[in-house]
Length: 243
Image (cartoon, rainbow, N blue to C red; front, top):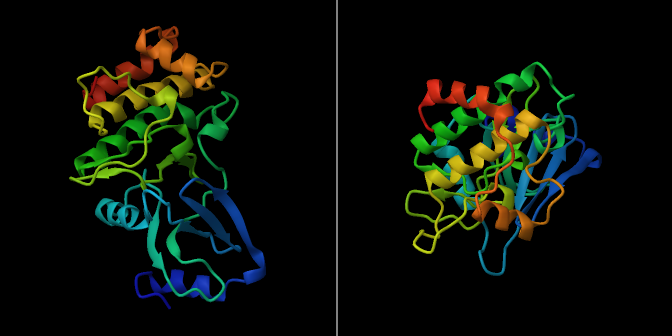
């Protein structure tokens, strides 16, 4: 069994029916494998021709963050093969991403706390000298109790190790010519503002616009009506004094 995993996790993975392994998600740098009915997934990273393998950085970040109720639960690294991919082991969240559940009809009672939870998750990782660098509804999962869990730190910035990913257009802070190209806390906070808007209205910012149009609108500071998120912003001002 893998020495980096809690014994009960390693045992569950070893005993899992290999015929019930399913692809749960795939991206540019990795894929996520659901391991039968164990309640665990394995994130297998790919070797990118330019950026290399992002797993070491993600492992380093999760180990620094440790356990937090608003961060996707990380158990360790599986590296034994035996019909399973090698990679990082996480708790499986069947409800999927926040992006898939933005509609106001989803979680009508739980969602009132999502803005505060997103802000707290961000405050916590910043306290650990981590900049997410791809903060958004696509990188939050919904847990069994309806709370959020921030995930996906493969391309994130930690200490002097720069980020190797960038924000989706609708979450990206408009840059001036003098801005540093590396991600900062301010960039994460701008993305948080977009996320709060999306939670409040039940859809993505400028959902019907192209990336090019969105970039132009943001640079011109042409924002949608923010009246619907005023209450959430006031809560965040009181709780975190970050705006």
